[in-house]
Length: 566
Image (tube, rainbow, N blue to C red; front, side):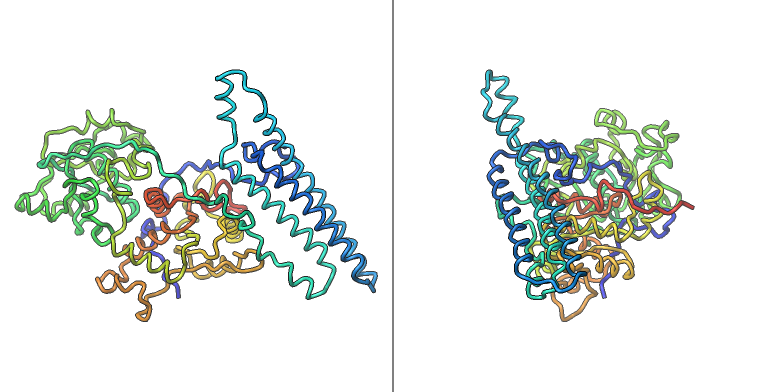
């Protein structure tokens, strides 16, 4: 039985999901790449880009091969077999007419591509009268992505060719002839190794960073309350950014107040990456203060409630032995806002600069501050690692062992969020909760591009849903296995490290293990609006494992059926 993934962006109450758990996202997505070979498409472009002139010879060969293969098939069926029944003859005629229709459609589509390559060839051959025009021609030349789209277009035509073959064969109930018509070999491998359709995203040539050089006696006390672990990690990264801006050491929360971060993260890795002591645990802070701990001042980024603190959490801070200073919002006027304002460093420094020894700024999950800077691959800090916040070494090794045991080097990871998602998604302008048949179609399209034989399924869905999803995910007549992490079995050794270190069975450890497995995949499909998915994307971008085929499930689509709200 598969282990149910305890996604850390779930909440105890489904009714609170839309308020606290998930990241509000812009639902307007880029449209999915579609074949440009359908009748009515622009003849000189695919996906908005021109095609490579070197592809013309390939098209000539393809055109000749298509016509000869269909002609040969027609001659074979006309001359090699005798029809004894009118009904069978009718079926043959119907199949041949269908094949001819498909062939005509394919011819028109291929001619569109041919015309587009001629247009590009004319541009390249034209004389360049000036340096300015030279620059213009150079920047308009097709890039590698054009070849990728060209391959996808050709793949579509190969599929149509298989339809033609199947149409011709459908009326001939001859087992030894139809046994060879499987589409087993119809995959992107027919294009060879020249271009990988799902190649890794190139890392940024440079990042915008800030040096974190704290004063040794000035501290920022991290407070993260919203949602569960994924939300807290987003909050923690923003605290690191503020600590760097304000030249302060970051005090990590006590496990009596927050999660036990050292179970899932490499805490010492933070200091090693930056190259100096920039963060300390609560216990280290307590020892340094000799049990006379205090937060001198609360400068709250969130105005209502101030610092996102309620009476219960204030009492829990006091129970840690902390004395608390005055609580005041940085922008009292924000209390009337329904949505946080976007802010930049110029807004932050005048409000949060202070000579107090220990300050707190409250929960930062909803803070909209320098988003592009903070969310860039590798994060906003100057450091020597791939990413500062990452899974613990034990979890990382366990994930690698799972991949070696069950998945291999080429697999797709699907984060399929369902628990509490129906209500949350249907409250959005464009729902993100897809019926299972539609979700399966979206997954199949990614499988076609990625040419991966197996899918790792990270989900909180019930078995009734996962079983149906598995029954629908077929490619070329074969099921694509959906693999879930199994329950612990002492005879399997892939998770032995966790159990040897008393981490096995911990919900937060298992959630981070799932994230790490997904981050190691060749291609990742996420759930739009889920912070669990966003944390996987952060890891993949930081580790340079992100693929050009990574996407949200059914990205750019809306569910084909949406229930009414309550």
